Length: 420
Image 1 (cartoon, rainbow, N blue to C red):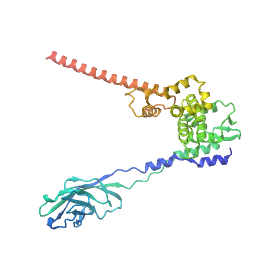
Image 2: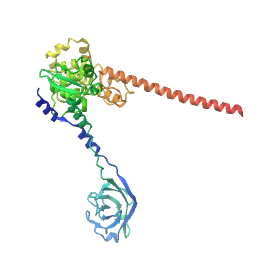
Image 3: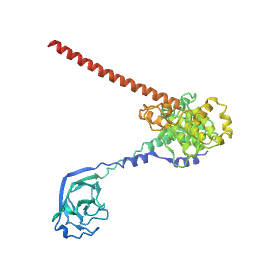
Image 4: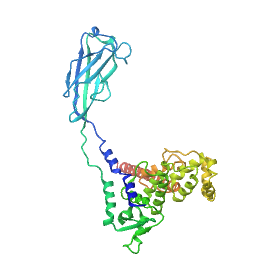
């Protein structure tokens, strides 16, 4: 693989800093402007007004909060009114949109309307009152409170991903370790400090090199895979949507497992599934691979696929290979025949046996507690069981403290009685 191919891959790598920027500019908080203010529209000689459904009379413009408002009254109701009911709606007819985007919270005759932005059809009710209850004049009171969303303050985009990729590019000049990858012998440079944090096994390989001036040979891996791995290690940069195949994701999975990159391993595991890597012909091999690499989610999904396609899978060469592993075969058959019962996704860890939970659910609970989410399902369960024990011990300590406090209060009361 030549440098031109690697450059094409890099152009198709997703830069997460743009996502961060999009998220950072989407937030805003409405703030109140001034106090609530009241306006009143009076429709005189109400019963002499046109009473056909859908016809309305508009009040004169009224000032409130620096804006002009009108109230439209439908003496015979609008199209949504019940028979014998009156409709009324409040409109802002100026709707200034200078420095602020405005919303209004209002109530008409004591009935609260939904918040609306200026320019909407209006605030009001189709059944605000019964015609029979109205006297000579009909009064409509509106209490208005304005809220505003201030202009979004520009923030610089998050350039960490971009800057880390620049650091990787600069490694050819200031890096302190180099690699010669694949048959092509393509050279890559990196920084040991980054590798120590993100790929400990690869860092150990770099530390063990006897001649630091010579590139470390990486056999059995393509330059494209190695380049993708480095870009992920430095900046969590991943190939853009649709620019990675199932076979490429499997190669990344192998690299991540070999060099101790748990985050890359989780990403590659997901991409194998997303890109349709599980098929009748591949599922048996994937079950064995996932079991050997402790890829819990991939293994769970592959076993589920097998359970739904068992007759066809049993005719493949991969199935014959899987029958040679008694432990894996027993687990697959047990789950496929439903002996373990249904797997549950969303559940509190205190509600049921942890082995009934999906891998995604186990990982979700562990991640929420800041724990490692890599490893086999058994490893995930073991970590959650430890957390459960810690929670129970913490509860017992709280109870003991409460009881001790109660005993101290009781002793103090007894002492007070003795003094008396």
